[in-house]
Image (cartoon, rainbow, N blue to C red; front, side):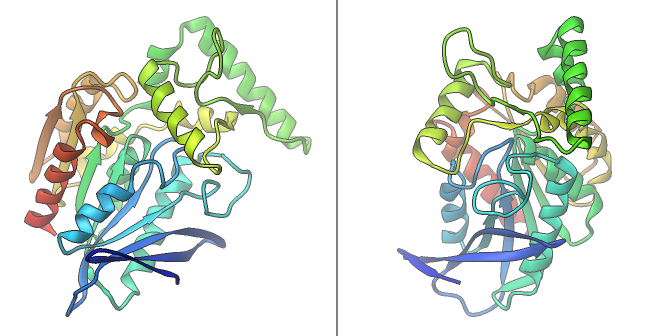
Length: 304
């Protein structure tokens, strides 16, 4: 572990085993501590790495007395895994569980007080983990993925969806024959280009991350898209209780549509809370950071 100091908190570079793959990240700790701390586990959304906006949340939580473990998903950022830039949501869910296991072994952390935080794609992951892992004590899902099946239908017409399914089938043939995976762009790179996300807010947010960080790249495997089209974590929302669930929804979100999040929230049992923020999908990381981070912090203070 390498230690870095930042005012009243410490940041350690950490790594842990996830079914034979090494995942890497940061552990934030308050500098002054006298007993094991409650811990918040964090990871990012679709194709994003930890440097793309997670540190401000981690610092804020840690400055308020929490240990915070932030890590890169398998195949991304500083973490190992092949093929690179492949997003398997079920493996990423297991990644959260491995992070919980690792955190629970650390002397600085109270293993009985572990909460989880996720945003966008990982917002869906924490719904799944919260519903399936008894070690979790508190869940915060920010602009979460609810239904890949429904969202993909909204993004593509019938003909386009059929064409994409044909691409998936060919990619599977190629892989079976030992060929390299097919890759696709996350955002377009020039006029009339196409990516998975083509809205201006996505282009701006991902583009900024790709420009700033060498290990943030504008591609994922085509199979990542295939997986996403039948990843429906909203189905697990009714099973999160009795763990407390805070859902943060952006009113004008078109990436993870707000109406789907609101419908899923209605299926949650108590204790639960809903916050509807102004703006779009990426605003919680910047213009609405104070609101999104403060509400999450207050939820952890109440239940963790």
